[in-house]
Length: 146
Image 1 (spheres, one colour):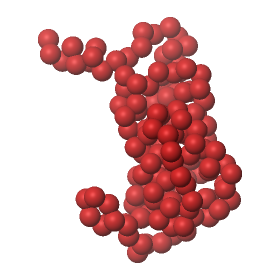
Image 2 (tube, rainbow, N blue to C red):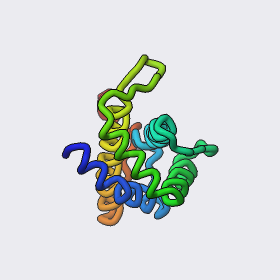
Image 3 (tube, helix red, strand yellow):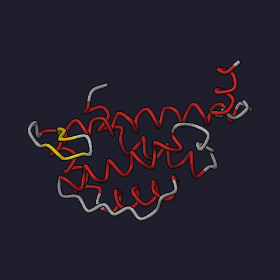
Image 4 (tube, rainbow, N blue to C red):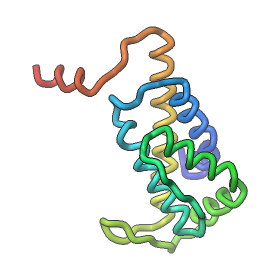
C-alpha cells in the first residue's frame, strides 16, 4: 500500500486500535505495549513540526492514544491538511536523535505503523473472540530457549 492508502485509512486504523484497547484487549505482553505510545508521540512531533498543536501529557498506552485521538478529532480538518502538506513536501527535514530525516518519510513510517498495528489488534480481537489463549512474550521466549 502506498502513502495515500495509509493516509486514507489512518482514522479508521486509529478507531480500530482504540476500540480494541477500550474493549479490554491486553496488548502489554506484545510489542504494541511498548511501541504504540512511542509511535503516537513521534507522530505528534512530526505533525507539530509542520505546525500542529498536539500536546501529550499521559504515558499509559490507552491514555496517550485517547489524548491524541481527541486532539486529532478536535482539529481533524487542519490535521488532515497538515498531513497532506507533509506528504506533498519532498524537501522538508526534521531533526531526530539519529540526525536529520525527511519529514515526509517520518510521516509515512508512522502511517504504515498504525496500519500494521490496526491489523494486529484485529487479529488479537479475533483470537480472543475464538477463545484462543492470550499470546505473551514469555511464552515465545520460553519456547525459543528450549
